[in-house]
Image (tube, rainbow, N blue to C red; front, side):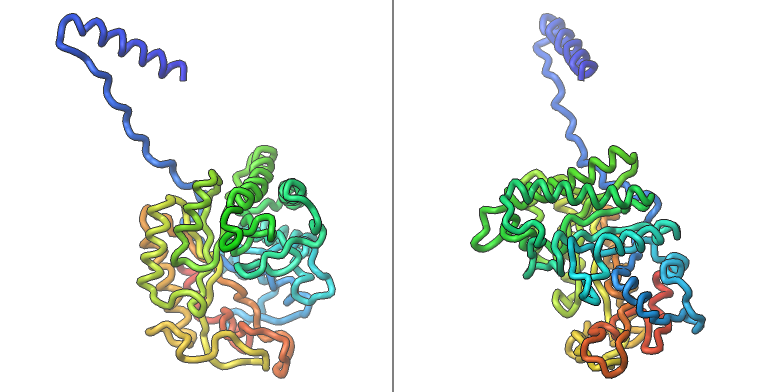
Length: 393
């Protein structure tokens, strides 16, 4: 700043001197500054990720998987890393019920153990912190039981301390995440009702923003201590009509690195042109890398257990993309094409949700997998052609 001031003084002195010689002298208007560069994504030119949050459970049940040559996969972590997956997403619940066969495998101890293996394989982690004891989404953002009855200020401090404690645990294992989500699908805020927004809580955006900032501050502290960059992400469900959310976030002065979006063709748009347009608009407006951190597509409409599948009818598909192995592969290739067409290279990649959630509880189970036709493995648990996209992109 001192150097700039000195140059300015010299310019103005010179101008006053010339004033006696010529009619006048006006300083040049300041040069417009370009927007800040998006975060450097290190060596990842494009993210082809998978959410392997179910894998610790699958391993505990000794569920077998096979590659495209029908050879048994001995370690899913090594398999995905060797086949083009360059980011693994893991969800984390605060204090889940350890007796719950699903929730109990997403506590800190188990997530940390699996995360350590991911980093040792040479891969990177996207840590999805739900800030809840159970599933958090736009319709449910339940406060952890341990924080029940706390004031807003106490919850705000708890967000910071909890996030810090989680990352310190990863740091001690030399397994720091590459990215951290501050909440999961937070369209309606999180940590209800302290950080709830929209509707009757329309005026609560400052509180929501304060909670987000506390989580980000903890990430920044670990960055400083470790000397390693950790990118922060805000995650909402859906791609279309999200401008208002991020506009409010900007108004509250929240500084974050990445936009994370869920895109499920069943729940969100099936119009791929609309998907492209919405992504382009978000990139133009906020100049941040965008990752679709939850997506999948069916390779069949059949089922392999008696658990109801979410996608099971022709009318639920995207026109031109049949529920077949090749249709699933074509959808994935098209999604990459859409992301790579986002302006300024801000379409940073995608993460396949529950690629490994095969029918693990027997063929007649009514409490098994509702996603076995949306995985990247067939009903013999053999890798599908969509793996070519991960490997070859």
